[in-house]
Structure formats: structure tokens, C-alpha cells
Image (cartoon, rainbow, N blue to C red):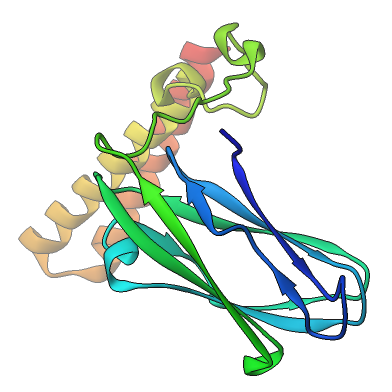
Length: 187
């Protein structure tokens, strides 16, 4: 069974349209429009019965001169359904209907092609983030802890004394003590 519905335009004359009378769709399919002449517009429409199980992304298509264009018809419902696909050229110059049959059971499962490379483990790149605690050095953690301690001591002093200069002095002393302790422990 063909997976595309052939449509020929401009083959026997300007705006001429040739389509098969019937098409069996066992799943999604392409309407393969072959233009044998000047550029023109082709309009596709699914009747009510067919549109209950199928859809087209866009109805109007500009077909360049002497070119071919594939238009996808997605079948995503269950059959059996017999409906009509209307094909129109040049804004109504020619109109043809194709009987489309979708058998019982709906569309066939379309194969999914998976690249074999996806099955192999991917190497870790340098840009991937490490867990936070592994990245932070002992020095960084010590400095952060010391900064928090100095802030807490300063806030407590300010809350208990209400004297800004005393609080500033305590913060300087605590920061100095932490700096000396850091140099002693780390170095």
C-alpha cells in the first residue's frame, strides 16, 4: 500500500488536477503534490467523517513552478472511516475528491528510529556542575562560617548595647580573630 497520495497539477493544462479516485490509509500519509507547470495554490480539506480521525496542519499551500511538495495528513483516530479529501487548485479553478478509507483499528504504529549512539553512556563534560559541597573548599566554608559568626556577634552586641561604635569595634575584633585563626589552621 502506498504511503503517499499522488496529486499532479498543471500536467495536462493550466490548473489541471489529477488525483486517484480512492486511497487506503493504514496510518498517517503524505499528499505528494507534483507541479508540472507554473506556480499555484493548492487547498486540501477533509470532510467531517475523515476529519474525525485525521488532520492537516495547514489547508492552503503555495506550490512553486515545476516542483514537488509533501503535505502530511496525520491519522490519529480509530476506523473504520470512509471520508473524502477535497483537493482544489488555483482558488477553485479545479476541484477533485478522493475517497480515503481508514480501516478498523486506527493507524498502524509508525516506527520510531532511534540512533544507536543514544544507547551508549555519554562522557561527562567539564561544564556539568559538581555537587556543591565537593566544589567548595575548606577555606571557602571556613570563611563563610567566620563571616556568619562575626555578623551574629555584631548583631548581638548592637542589640544588647545600642551603641554603634561598640558594635563596630566588636566586629573588627571578631574579624581579626577569625583571620588569625584562618591563617593558623589553613596554612
